[in-house]
Structure formats: C-alpha cells, structure tokens
Length: 120
Length: 105
Image (cartoon, rainbow over all chains, first blue to last red):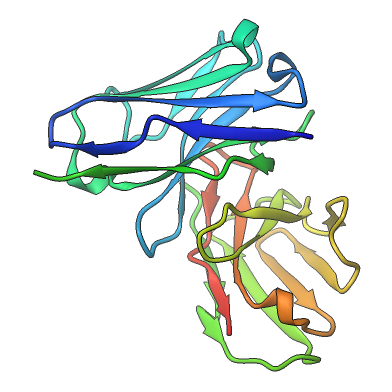
C-alpha cells in the first residue's frame, strides 16, 4: 500500500528550528519528485519546497527561502524539511506529496500531515 | 507568480444537485490545471489532472473542463461524500499555486 507518513512537528518558539520527516512505503521514493506543501489553520494550500528524484535540484518558495531546506535520503525512503528561524506565520500543517511521473507539480499522493506551531 | 481565483468561495447544495466550481488563472496556463478535494482534518486528494483527466479511482460524476485561463470542475449529481472543500492548482509555472478553495456545504 502506497503511503507517506510525516513526523517531527510540534510546538516551537519564534526563531527556533525543527526537522520534519516524511517516510514512504509501498513504493521506491527514488523514482519520484517530491514536494512539501503547508496549510495554515483554516486557510488554503501553499507549496513551499520541491526536490528532484536524485536530490540534485531543489526549489523553495520565496516565503521560506533561506530559512527552510528540503533534502532526501533515498536509501532510507525518506524526505526531510529543515526549518530554521521559524516565525508565527509558519504555523501550519505540513504535508509531503509525491508528484506524478512525468508531470511536475501534479500531487498524486499526500501524507496525513504534521502540525508545526510557532508560538512563545 | 500565477494567481488562481476560485468562485464561489462557498456554495450550498443538496444531494443530487449538479455543482460547478470555476477557477481562473491570472495568465494562460494551457491545460496545466489540477483539482483536489479536501475533507476536514484530511490531506487533499487529487481528483482531476491536466484540466480534464480523471485520476484513477475517482467517480465518473466528477468532470473537468477548460484551457488557457478559465476552468471548471463539475459534479453531475452530488453525493453525501462529496461535501468538502475543492482547490484548483496550476502546474504550469513555478511556483505552483492554488486557488483559495470552494467549500461545498
């Protein structure tokens, strides 16, 4: 069964750091482009990061550039998002998403999400 | 960035109704438009990709149309499990961007 499971969320103070993980099962992560997408409470969806299948190419939204870094370990079937210099407006549920083969930014499989709360 | 505008932001409908949601892009995106359904507390689920293609496992009462800047998703006969929020998303430009959502209640 194809599944993505995020972990690592929690309560952090402004200026703090967190590392989110996304573990894939039922398929080889190495064959897919992946993205992180977040959703603030009661709000819409915001794409924040992309990483190529090999991990050599990465993109980040302007809102997180220089503060967040996406990475992956295909041997562990895992995707990561390192969050630094967190702000209250980063409070959101963070989803990892698998992109369809041959179609950039078409999110065919999502994890259940992990909640990050930035508050003093 | 390409702006995606959905209308309406919410709508009230009954089981059996035909429901149509509109999405407009701020510039042409050809057919690079995807639709997602999201239920409370759950992750979004891909319904339609490339404007008019039904994702595997999605009921045939869902259909998508459009190209360029104007797109629609239609539910031909609303079922109880279809009450949810729907999002459009363009995959033409970087960054990919989402519409604000349409809540069907």
